Image 1 (cartoon, rainbow over the protein chains, first blue to last red):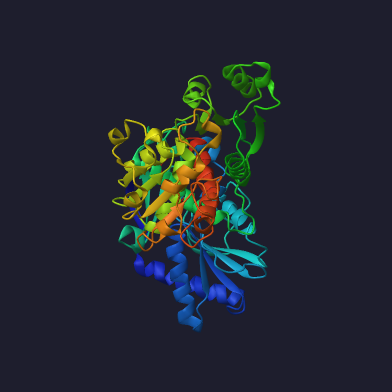
Image 2 (cartoon, rainbow over the protein chains, first blue to last red; image 1 turned 90 degrees about the vertical axis):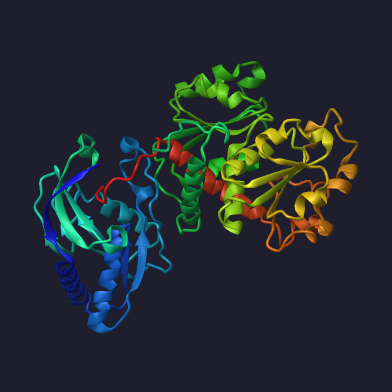
Amino acid sequence: MQIREKAQILDAADMDRAMARIAHEVIERNHGTDDLLLIGIQRRGVSLARDLQAAISRIDGTEVTLGTLDITFYRDDLSTLGPAPAVGSTELPFDINDKTVVLVDDVLYTGRTVRAAMNELMDYGRARAIQLAVLIDRGHRELPIRADFVGKNVPTSSREVIKVMVEEFDDVKKVVVGDLIDDEASDEA
Amino acid sequence: MFGQKHLLDLESYTASQILEILDTAENFRKVLDRPIPKVPVLRAKTVANLFFENSTRTRISFELAEKRLSADVVNFSASGSSVAKGETLRDTAENILAMKVDMIVMRHPDSGAARYLADRVPCSVINAGDGMHEHPTQGLLDMMTMRQHLGPLEGKKITIVGDIAHSRVARSNTWGLSKLGAEVTVCGPAPMMPLDMESLGCKVEYDLEKAIVDADAVNVLRIQLERQENQIFPGNREYARAFRMDRRMIEKLKPGAIVMHPGPMNRDVEISSEVADGDRQVILEQVTNGVAVRMAVLYLLSGGARESLGEDL
């Protein structure tokens, strides 16, 4: 699957500013960081959750506990696309019961990833609340899901692709919009 | 792409396919430790377990793996079934498939039965042991356990002790381990040693001590008392005297070397009770890993894995 880049939406400094604002909003909404957990969705959500953790720490000096979630085994498209290799792992070395969980992902699109993440979380316990933070909301929801914290709203067509790049996996930090070149790309849904 | 429809043997699998199963199994191993150790990947799929030969551990392990993946499970065992009334394997399979089954797990006393079935049914077939041919999921769980203790298996020295000729576990271990670059030594009484073992790339050793001194892992096979109707060896005591893993042998092992057994054990025949309960053995870890490895196989065969796409679902 090839992507032809059309435009850059955010650069590294924009991404940091968005994360700093989300950090303020998370603290404001939850009246501090008590009983708060950040859980990044593999893979790029994990990098962003780490950024959010650092941003929160710069504001109020606390280190919020971090976990990771790999939703591969909870996808709803196994029967149409077949199994994908599990790219990361779920690491939740803490009790989520009665905690407020902030799920962190890079792009909110159909909402199916978040649905899968919530199903998986519920297999670990009963969080007091689950909130959603995303860097980009590109629309085209297929489920009744919305984000609590959004870095940037980007209206897109479904033929376009939003690519969030983080240093950990892409060696650069930026967000671009592009077109799919490959015909099979319409499978991405 | 995973690129395999069936798991009939490890002989036809590549090293990268074996590693993909082992890596996926590590993720499922973590699922087993969760508060709710169940994931929905095989929801609405039906798996038939056809056991034409007695098995407790493997059957329960497969059934548990299937249930942990949310599959629906039907069990069929030869005793008390239509097989006893003379139905052929093909007719049995076709009847079960007519009930809309998505995957078949089969154990059969005849070598090649899994291949025979796979050539005749449209669904995926997983070999849970066919005669003296292969028992691929046992080979995989053994490799998973070795890898957890020893790290990457390339260059590791693995010794398999027992009735090599009649053992499908030995064959699956040998194929799998040699594909991953391990050095395999087989050890057992001469009448239990097939002639062609060197052609599989392994060393043959008839002296237990020599076979294990350099080993990183010793996989002790069960002496299959029920398959000894031809009296290949004089008796259990003679076998134990020369080939039993006991304290004397444990003292010869390298530090960090592990002792494995696929079960069920004949205590004090091929392995002494002291070793079977000792600090070198990893036998119950093998059993837990067995569930994870079977989950990985069922998952990867359930539709043929694809490359992961972008981050959006």
